[in-house]
Image 1 (cartoon, rainbow, N blue to C red):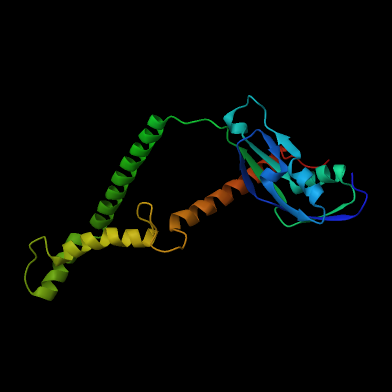
Image 2 (image 1 turned 120 degrees about the horizontal axis):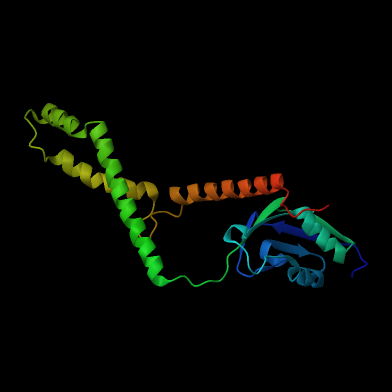
Length: 214
């Protein structure tokens, strides 16, 4: 135990995924300070252990940074802690189970089929709702001065432009990205993850399940 006043800067992430049910401080936080030996020991400090046999719904635990500070000061009472991270944070435990490759391929195939037919239905419903066929016929007659045969330059360009526009908008094709900017799906997923974490924290707080100081 150190008797000299030391400084510790700690940054706790809002959500941390762990593979080991015994959670160490280094799994959820980044630290720096004036005492390197202290930091090395703190990184190995166990802050929580998930039950060995538990329901999948209990693989999530919410803690507060105050509880972490209490644990640290129990070992190093003279440390001056500066919090650069979250006040409340979520720990998610994911057991190291190897999923079946067949099951993963089956899930991917089903998802692809659902997305394909769902997108096709949406596009057809949209085109039917705004009467794209009639619109193209009227536009073709106004420009060309004759009736449309049903398959003209308008329909061809529309059919090509639709998938190209989707690819450009979503900034993603296969494993490649057009630009380095996050795709709209990535942005929405991060927003969703943030909302989920906030909900976990709020629910645990109201239910009294948050690990906090007394």
